[in-house]
Amino acid sequence: ATYARAGAIQRKAYRARTAMKRENLSFEEAMDRVGMSDRQKALTRQARQYDIMGAGFFDDLALDNNTSRLWDILGENKAMTTGRAMGSAVEHNARMAHYIHMIDRGLTPADAARSVRQTLFDYSDLTAVERRIRYLSRFYTFMRKNTGYQLWAITRYPGRVAQLERSEEHTSELQSRS
Image (cartoon, one colour):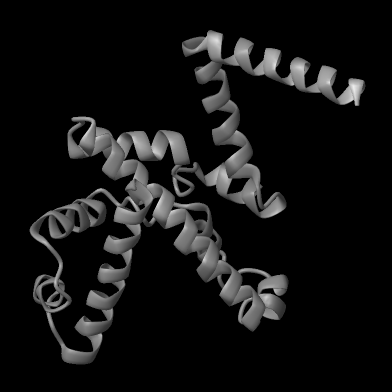
């Protein structure tokens, strides 16, 4: 249900941005024009304020625009741009759904945004050296952020890790019997 709520907000926010451009409206006027509820408007404002949508993997990928020969060849390819757009939509939905879930659980907007960045990673949060490394390995940021997150999860929730290990052993047992 939370993903559906996030999707509804995303669709209306997209329509609001389109209305802004076509009709020269402010974002507030455009949100009214597309029929956003007060709650949807508040969540959209917060998502913009805390940059919930602009720090994902596909947003980070867009920063590489015009910086490499490979980008010159593939950057504007229809399949690539469509794939990036689809990936961004899915990722933004997960980020917004997580944010809404945390707000519903009682977190402040700032804490909910921090949870999004911790759990789904802020791909723009890199040092200058890491930005250079990222060009060598497209997935450097994910590997760096995910390793830290997994170590944190293991220390915070050791029972879950043990449960996962038991599940994997049980699955292997069942497969070997077949």
